[in-house]
Length: 268
Image 1 (cartoon, helix red, strand yellow):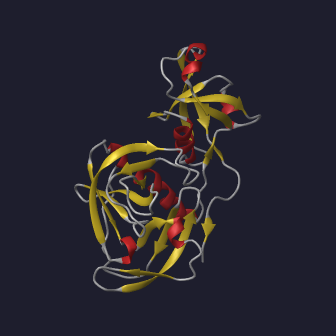
Image 2 (cartoon, helix red, strand yellow):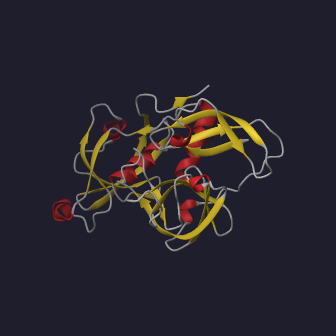
Image 3 (cartoon, rainbow, N blue to C red):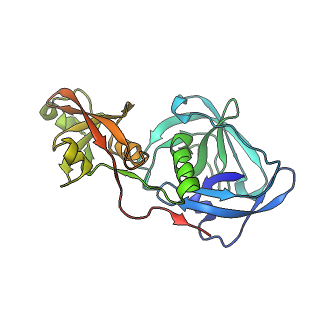
């Protein structure tokens, strides 16, 4: 049985024990963990294990009801209810790759690694962090969406490592002051300020001044959005990248490269 959790919950642990609702206490093996997204994966060798059905975090809408499950302050399993306050929260400075679901369902210390489920009980996120001046919930909690966590989990299960995609561009957000010069109508997208020599982006024809607005049919709203989408693409995969160039949309087919360096701490 595989258990999805946060990297910071299991980081540095010499022994992990998982307790189930029926009272069983199982020794768990850390399969792997990814500090850049704060995703961790455990495995227990046991039969008759409970499981949860995957939901689709991309279909969540603002004000959808969600439930946060966890063990706040060690009091025991607790469920709190709230709504989706926002989606795609970035620049929270928690991890390198951020695309958080924000919720006002109470998330407190001890909720990390717990499930965020929708009104039908399907898994839509992994409770990860809170914004708080007191240490307790102030109605601003963050969860990793399963659309991001699941492919990272599958990569850890399959290879023991997470290989992230790489285009080879230096990017920045589009400001309102740039709209006229770039012939744009909105600030959505990621501006290419430089293209690295010999990179997949250069070979495909991307250049300085392009604004990336779409990757394989997924809208790009800012630099973090582009980083997240490209990172989840397996290296060697061919994707269609749409840019705004001189006020017109242009499409490019790019074979995604591999981001250099190991990004997963493999545990034994």
